[in-house]
Image (cartoon, one colour):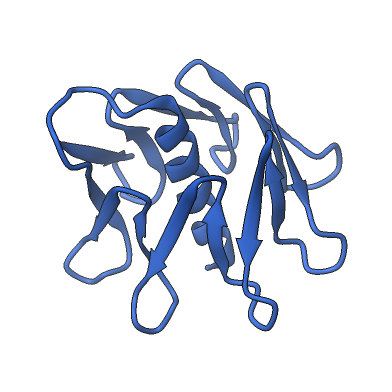
Length: 147
């Protein structure tokens, strides 16, 4: 099953993952909802602290995600590259800059390799499971923040 990633007219903001719409704040700088899930940020920061009921904690010194809900996040000690979110292992490109896969998902980028445009989930079906939708959104969100 192929899942399309939709962007705004300028092509800069991710506006949908399959059937899940992503809305933004008034300034258009921060996502506010993912489908029906509200996105909550730290009070005086830009760091995402919850998606729906799933709270996100970060390591104290490096700022990498430590937990998402009840899932642990693993990362390399030296570079703080995210390796796993809960049960889903992340696969990176050769340089380690972009995530190419999340568990069973395969992520495809545009011709320039700058923007993910499609995700493939093996098998048939019409809807991305909630746990994979959450993980995909978070990984893409964090990847964009890193620049």
